[in-house]
Length: 167
Image (cartoon, rainbow, N blue to C red; front, side):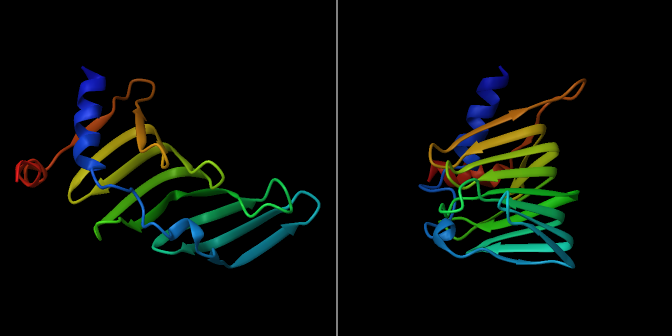
């Protein structure tokens, strides 16, 4: 039953041909913060204090962001954001926004994989999904939401999304 509800939700919630704007991940990453610390040996940059990260239509706000480039010659990064909560906003291919929040977000640009943990939430056009952990494989367009100890996944679907699919 849980898989059926998640599948039904995903068909409506992520029904665009592509989750993100086509060129978002090919854009430069701009980060502003109160402080920055660079560990050149390990290729790790830590940003703290009112961190704002922008890449194309992606906008992430957090208390702390850690960017790791596993191989100094690679242009692929692992981005971790922490906040109370950390938030993101993105414009979808169809022009509609999607918003999310969690205490921790981890995005691996090499494999286009997002993991949101601790009070994770995604909202699009008034419909939402909440859980302890939400993972999204962007290239495969597969989302999984998990509850936690004594906590279930909650999904709210707006009637207008059902009506739009029937047309």
